[in-house]
Length: 253
Length: 253
Image (tube, rainbow over all chains, first blue to last red; front, side, top):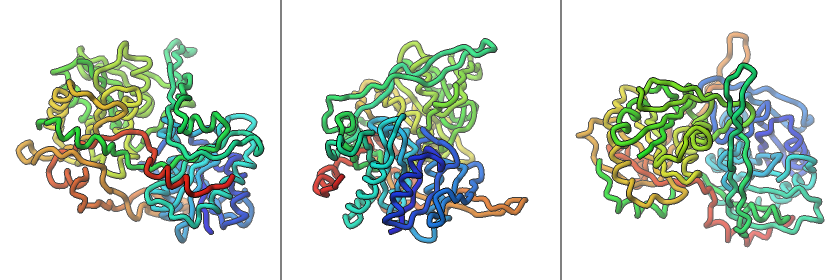
């Protein structure tokens, strides 16, 4: 099995290091990841300047790894189009420090790397641990390795990918797996307005998270209640149910 | 009527200028847009540095306008959370120079600004002209103004927005309006590998567009054949049809 790994926390993050070590037990692993943190880059791609691919050897002699001066999407595109000789069996993005849940998925660099793979028709998983501090990546990495094993013989649905969020709990405290939909997770009061040392205003994104915890089939509910959440996602943003409604609107041109 | 306008070509682009002038005929217009081109930023948001909002007066005394050192999503977030006193009736993003069609929509800064508005529950339209050179924005701007008029009394569907692509044709040559789904529009052979003046390799994103022109209900087909395309889109990436399938996969943890 050949697995391409990327992320948005950057190639030197602990989450990708632990994941690569674990996946190396079952596959030939390639790493193509950003040279630094690229969180909240969403699906940005670099068109107006060149990209550099620099070989790094931090993962040991068995793992071919490149760091890129670009976004997570750039990394996956560049890997699949230019750096890898043949397509991998899986693309895994992560393991991200912090959740990628609900509405926030649209901003996620971690998920965008996996979406990029799905656009190329390659089975992909985005993986996150739902905490920012005192994270243990050991069990999450083990879970992702086992997940690759369980699904490698399934017919992975075309144009889709899996978004996996793992609670930051000891293995014994995890209650199970839930297959979920993306829930509601937004921010409120988003900006702090402050004054700089020269007397000019500036704004800094802040904000309190609003989660809908009543939606018990959602990813938000699942991780809050100790379950690993697996959400099938896709990249076709069409709202099909509305097409017929719009046709009745009688829009003039 | 109050309309917030943003874009990803930057506040000094011709497309936003023509649009603002036209919308001012029917509404009080506010502009909050990036200080420079921000194409292909997708839904990136700025979390790790401050944002500045600088007032600009290029649109005349009736239009309150700010340029922001951020992405299109930043602009809409900042406008709705901090700069505007009350929510607008519409958020319009554009008019973009170049198409936002099919698979490419996921990379679009223009569409992301409109999605941001939809997340806030405000009716939103992303508008693009499907050409890069010799564009006339006059008729497209007029069409968007009329579209706001036609839909202002409709029940605009929650969590959805309209992605509008207008062919770069004279008014008389436009064949009509099609309500479409997002089609297939991808790139092939994406990177040029080159050598810099110091002998080091670099990569530059290029690539030939692959369009599926057989899908006659798609946005790609519509604009290619002289129609204005209107696609209803949303930001819930869940692939609902797969939830039941995944439940049968019997994944271990």
